[in-house]
Length: 597
Image (cartoon, rainbow, N blue to C red; front, side, top):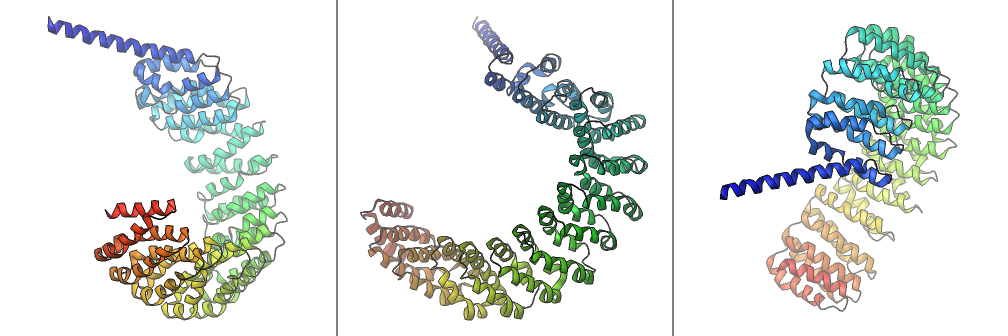
């Protein structure tokens, strides 16, 4: 009887659970029909919950058809639905049934709203990865045909994005049919469809057969590059990059060079702008000789373009392009550098900033001699111009130059200019110099740093701008790692100890901050015998901020201090600070004491 009652209770609980689940599903499905947008949106975001609850079979046979019938006018709803369906492969039973998700996505791919169509195409691509060749041939191929032959441009536009995922997996006759459809879409009367077709061409080119590449894809590329709409022509450079990797030298010269020349002279500055930005990627696909003989002239024309944005875009790629003709040093000297000099005097501030961001990257390409003769004079000229962004860009990348030229050039030519920039009225420029000079000092060696830079460096720890003081303090870590703890003990710490006596509380603070940063790099006896005694005397300072920083500094030094010094010096000092009238001082002292305990 007992067992019977237990079985009955289990059955009742199971029935109740099943009823509750079915009720929840019914509620969610009902919410999808609600007039309230927020309720429908929340419900559509939970369709995976419904799918999980009803199981694979009912998801395929009931839920998917139900979702296919949704005709919501709100784009927010259909966008979420398109995204969620891309995650549905596991819910319909795995890869074997992945094609069952296509009907609702196909319908969404015809939507008027662009973002909905794009998300639908994206989800179809995700699902296609779960399909085998037979599924793609049987189910996806007809979908593409249906969309490509659609009455409305929205349908044809979505079809364009699906050719490359289908082409590899269908039979020969289907491939021929796909290419015919693709050609029709490239000639579509609607610019938006032609644009999507032009976008897909770069994806389709690498997977078609060589014969079809030359017979169909390249002619379409040339045709689209001459389209009346600049929104279509602007995609030509991407297509050229893709096709350039697939053809030989003669074909490149015959087909791609004239196309690039036309694009570089296009009537729309937006097209020229994108060509200038991506031109170097074309040069990466071909031999340096072709770059020198056929592409260099086009690139120089882009750098001399009348439109500011085109020059900016091209200038940012000078070093990338120059890498491709690195073996032709004379050409770089005679052709590239005259245009660089011209750009350094450009009337546009944006062009100069763009040049400053890449000019030092030319040094590894051209080597020591040309850097001295041509590059450094241009850099020095830019550093002396009254544009802080230009100075910042050059200083932030000076390391590329300093690794190439000799120490003598660095000391006699570059360092004096940098030291002079310490007086620049723009604090960000000064901060960039403070951040770079330690790297230069490490390169020039400890003796040079001690003789020429260390005294200057200590003044940066006393700068009126906190960010400069902080940057100088943080760089002390790298200097100590490079020059050693003994160097820090005998050459650096005496200067910092002097700063602890500075009447300005901000200087005392940065000195304590510097000591806390240096502690992990120093011997424990140096911290215990030299640092701690210099710090604890500050407990009698009248400025709350100094005592607050003292408590924080001592807290940081505890792991690096001898136990005797902790007990005899740090704990008494913190105990005194614990009783301070200032609440913040007392709080930080308590935190430090709690850690000791």
